[in-house]
Picture 1 (tube, rainbow, N blue to C red):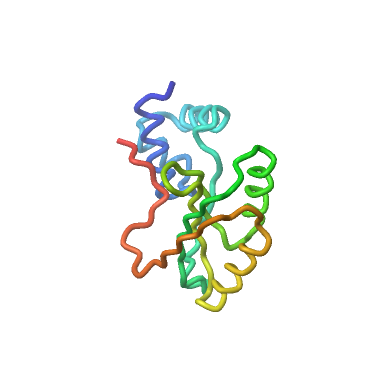
Picture 2: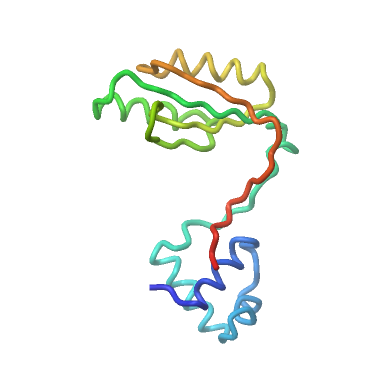
Length: 152
């Protein structure tokens, strides 16, 4: 179980994973060694999956974001595994969820432009067996984009 100090540490790390241990200790009122131990425990228990730097996709040339809803024709375990493996191997796919409702999967795809999306789309439909229906929407404006969980 995590306590209030753990939550303070997690909240701070979400906004800056490179924060120094001394600052975490100041935030919580704990000693540096106690903060280090809390951090170690949360990593071991899986509360912290990884520490990364978030890159600006637009500055790096990935200015087109597409959302694809896919419906597949075969839901057998073998077909689903092949489908999932195939989609996961595509670098342009940055988010991939199985969903409820009319469609089976949701993909978030980042590419340079419409031409690059066309190439991705052709690759998707030619290499992924069993896709029955695809609905695509393009992002017009990024209004909110965060990785931070609502820790209070």
